[in-house]
Image (cartoon, one colour):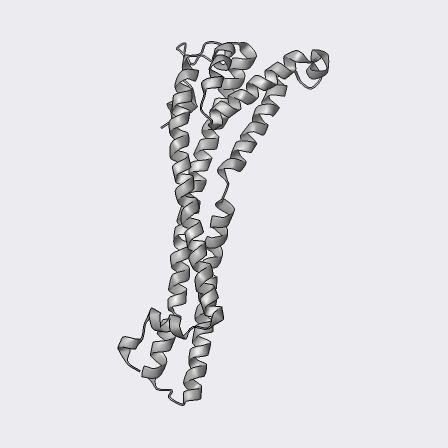
Length: 241
């Protein structure tokens, strides 16, 4: 066999429907994975900028009423959405029979549950697409390996039928089939790295959001921001990079 005729193009020309289906599936998985990674990284970048703008105004607020007045102009980002949940919850608490709500633990407990539910909803938004990334990262190597086994089987079958079993006749088709394993790894590695990076970013965002929820709860319940060290309030979430 001419060495110049070997390679991915030759393998693709000789591949059957199963091998081509595997190649197309891994190509689609790679495109979807990169799309999710780029989309989520861009989303985190925009979220960081919007959160910084909102928290700059939030730090200057000296009452919950000041925070509520600025919410209509606030951007659509997790901290602002959590502040809206706190505002709606306090209005609901004030508008209904306080005796029934006090039995559930008072304003603090009522607002805590509402904020916790809001944080859980933000967690669901942040985890969008991560399941698919994890699935691609864990299955793509095995799909590529299956393609390799399938290609080697048909290559050896063709060589056996031709009666030419020398090393130079076997090495080419088997080497071409190994391309499938390389493709599987090329699809899986970015998906795994993207999943790990996005999971870490989500964990940081949720930690900051939880800290912001504590400061928001303090402002809503006491009517004043939490003072630390006798100075103006310095929110942990606002000071983070």
